[in-house]
Length: 80
Image 1 (tube, rainbow, N blue to C red):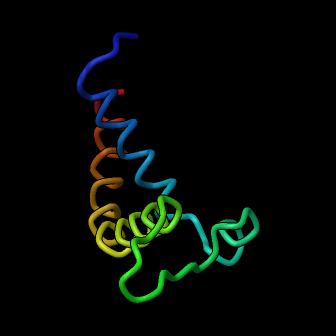
Image 2: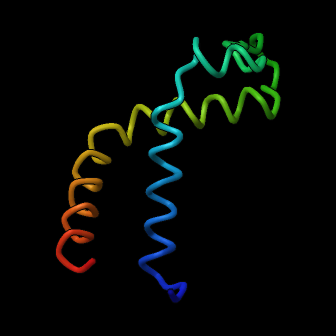
């Protein structure tokens, strides 16, 4: 099996799927990544920035990932 552009695209889609199914109360809060808010005028830390990135990916990519996953599954069924 060769490592090509499709394999890289498929790995990125799997990573996006993994980020989208993370649940804050069940997973992120247990490892100490709950809701942490920086005060006004303070720079948020790395943990807060990653948490904001996860939230924004979940918000923006939830609906498009459904279509992308259906397309990838259809391609896998047709081309193997």
